[in-house]
Structure formats: structure tokens, C-alpha cells
Length: 458
Image (cartoon, rainbow, N blue to C red; front, side):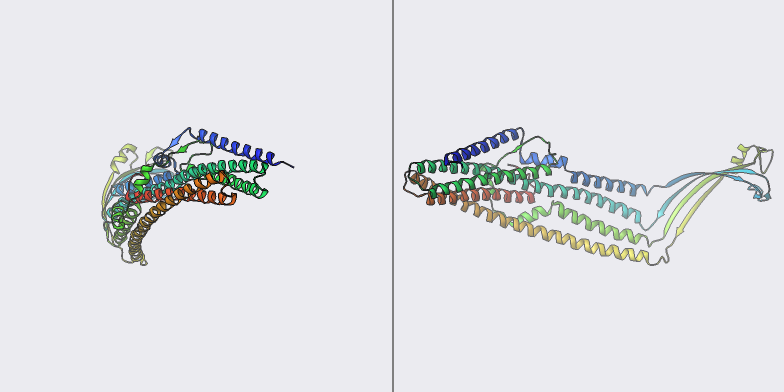
């Protein structure tokens, strides 16, 4: 059985060890200090989703380059070699012969489309839009991740202050237990009083452990967003100042924020570009219904000789080099292809492209409507957060003053331990609520800055 003094010594040691450990941890983490902009920049440089989205943009750029190159004439060369056995057709005299002979041909051809319903030009225009849409998708990916980093960063700041407040509450609880133990030994307190003090100390210690775990998790979340591995160096974050809190207490007009956001927000820009690309897809599909006119040209020659004799098939006294010159040919082709019936493929493709276009217009409007709703909610949340912060600030100051009075009266025995513990619990809860409302206000204001396209700093 442990004595009360033994239990008190163990509790004091545990508190001291916990505070020292936390202090050492804080010192280690002080190796690097990250501002919120540092965290955002690190995420933008390291995040794999952004890198993957960048590769998609590169693919869209290649598609645009290829569609432009499709306007250029095609050029191809070919060489054919034939070995003939048994009865074969003499390519020079068109007579059947029974001799083994070798025949070689060479050609060079080119072709260019003169008209194709402007399908290729519309494809180029569509690929330009798709490239711009790819860049907007990249911006949207960055934008979404920035908001996640800001959220995680504020969670770290909040949990840091929460841990600090929990440690201070633990010190007060430990001191209260020590005082109650001394009064109990002097005969001025009962076992009920010391039990209450122990319960308060145990609760305070649990709060420290919980706050430390929450802080660790929030650091882990932020590190994962920045793609920092488990062996990455430790860091701390910069806390907002009183000036930042004062600047957060602003009022915004929903329409002003919405109109500003509408001009640059990546989600809206992406929806607009997708609609434009779908519109061009209709023109591309219609192009397949038009006649196609193409111009081509070719040159070529051939030669042949009887195997074993090294002599030409046609004129035995002609050299092989002369055959190439004598058989040289040129040609020009003008091709016109008119689609008449193809199983309604073209008509179906046009219909599907039009349906997709109508869907993209709806998606664009839905995106705008959703942005308007989100901004209206963000402005309302900021107003509510401001009111809650002011209320919690007053409550905390009042509870703090009340506890100071109770603490002084308790020290001289004018207040019992139950009233003292109740006052301290109210003060601690008011402090937690105040810390939470303070950072909630700051976060809500940064969300408005996010929709206004402002750089998020403090």
C-alpha cells in the first residue's frame, strides 16, 4: 500500500516529467519554424497529386501539338523486293515465264487534305481549350490542397495552445492536491476533499495526454499534406498575432465576394472551359458529314533481273541502272470522298456531342450556384464566428476574474473545495472555448481570403 505522501510524490514526478518531456519536444521541434505560406509552398512543391495533374497538362500539350501537325502533308517512302519461282508474270513483257527472277520497286508518296469539313481545325481549337482546361484543373487541385493545408495548419496552432492551457491547468491541479494533502495532514481537510483534488489532478493529466495526442495527429496530417516523410526534420508553426485577430473581424458582402471569385476561381474557370470544349466537339462531329477532298503525288521506279544470269528480264543488253531511269514514274491524285450512309454513325456522334454540350452548360451553372452558396455560407460563418469569439472572450475574462477571487478566498479557508473546483472547471472550460473560437474566427476569415484570391498569411 502506498501512503498519501507516496502518491503525491508520484503525481508530482509524473507532472514534472510530462512537462519536461513536452518542453524537450518543443525544443526539438524548434529546429525549423514554418509560416503558413511556407507550409503552402512546401505542399505545392512536393504534393504528388499536383505532379500527376501537371503530367495531364503535358499530355494535353502533346495532343494540341499533334492536332496541329495533322494539317501538314504526309510523306512516306517504300521499297518492295520480290523473288519469283516457277511460272511467273514477266513485269516487263507481261508474259508468263518459268525462270527464277528478282524484282525490286521503290516509291515516294505524299498527300494533303484540302477540305474535310473543318474537322481538323475545330480539333485544334478544341485541344487549345482542353489544354487551358488542364491548366485550370491543375489550379483547382492546388486550390483545394491549399485549403486543406490552411485547415491542418490552424489545427496545429489550436492544439498547440490547447496543450499549453492543459499543462497550466495540470500545474494548478497538482498544486491544489499538494495543498489539500498538507491541510489533511494538519487536520483541516477531510478525505473527501483530498479525493476531489486527486480526481481533478487525474482529469487534468488526462487532458494533457489528450491534447498532446491531438497535437501529434495534427502535425502528422500537416506533414502528410506537405509530403514530408516520417523521418523528416521536426518543425513548429507560427501563431497568429492580436493584429491578425483584429483584421479577421471584418464584414463582407456576399455579392462582392462572389463576383470577385467568379472572375478567377479555378472551379468556375474549369467548368467554363469544359463547356467551350464540348461546344467545339459538336463542330468536330459535324465535320465528319462533309465531303473530304485530298491531293496526293507519288514517284517511283522498278528493276528486275533473272537470277543466276544478272541480266534484265526485258532487254538483255540493258544495264540495271538504266532500268531505274527507264521505269521512273510520277503521278498526281485528287481524291474526293463523300459520306452517303454509314449506319447513322455520324448523326449519332453529333447527337451525343450536343447532349454532352448541354450537360456541360448545366455543370457550369451548377458550379456557379454552388460557389455562390459556399461563399454565402462562409460569410455567414465568419459573422457567427466573430460573435462567438467576442462572447467567449467576455466569458473567459469573467470566469478568470471569478476564479482569481475564489482562489484567494479558498487560500484563507473562506471557500470550500467543491466551490473552488467548480470555479476552476468553469474557468478551464471558458479558456478552451475562447481558444477554439479565436482560431475558428481566424480560419473563417482566411476562407474568405481564399475565395477572394488573396495570399493566406499571418
